Image 1 (cartoon, rainbow, N blue to C red):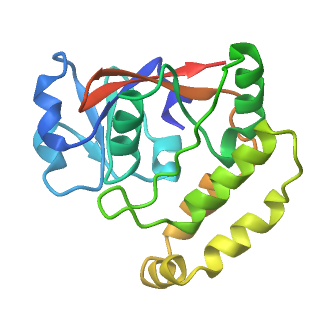
Image 2 (tube, one colour):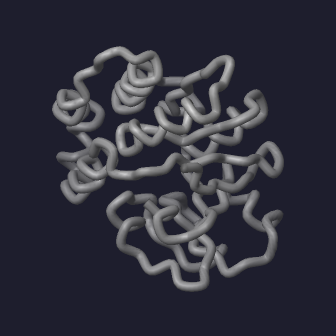
Length: 194
């Protein structure tokens, strides 16, 4: 959602990588403890990211799973694209333009443990179906994700996350994909690819 209002955002796999980035006025997007040591912060919430004023700050995304997955994928791929239900059509168009010889879909899940997360797996299934020209009923995804015990428990504890789930599982909200370019094994830049 941040790429709708800024040209690029930094991605780091861990907070300790922020000092190695070029000196900028950062808006740290993270729910990790200690993030506020690096500048103003917002939670890693799609709804908050869609509403926050970026002004003259560069967003710096630090998550427990997604940013680590992007950095790891960049060590093994020529092009790394961040995709999901929110940009399925844009991803398909991007893939047609790029015409890669192969595609690997890597759902984040829990990066440290390797545990699969249903929301990531279903998004990956939708991406694979779309790229393969096969039908996939995305309308069932939100209910399946909300019914998954891990997600249901978290929503019961933190009701305000419901809007984040709705936004992150919305279909084709974005007309672009996020293209990730690694700077090193712990950081890189996410820019719009249209």
